[in-house]
Image (cartoon, rainbow, N blue to C red; front, side, top):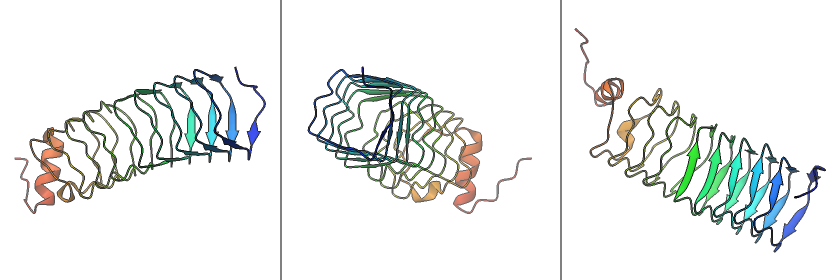
Length: 201
């Protein structure tokens, strides 16, 4: 298990942290490059303004861990699990994100531009103000998710389940919709975006 002492401003390159128990470790402004974190675990850990470049986080498990304003570049998160985690303001670029298990948590303001998120279960997570532009969400489940203010320009929502999702300020007309599942509130929003005058009575 890693030391509980906070780590600040360290560059960690090419290290093997396979199956490492990170516990509640605290890293601030650290640069992880080519680090193998496969099957690692964390619980209550904090990664603050850290960068993960060409890292392997596949099959890792994180519980109530915070990745705040972090950047993930070309990083493998295949089969990773995030349970009740906070990823506020983090950016994912050219990452492998599926399959991935996400159970609750706050992903507010994350950038997932052009990510393949197809067939993921993202039910109930907080994605307010997230950038989902050009994402592939085909067949994904976003039931009861908070999507207020999210950007969905050119996002593929084919067969996506949006029932119960909060969609305030979301321009669904800018997304690709085909057999998208909406509840009554979502359907009314979509109709209004297309210029319909919805008469409730």
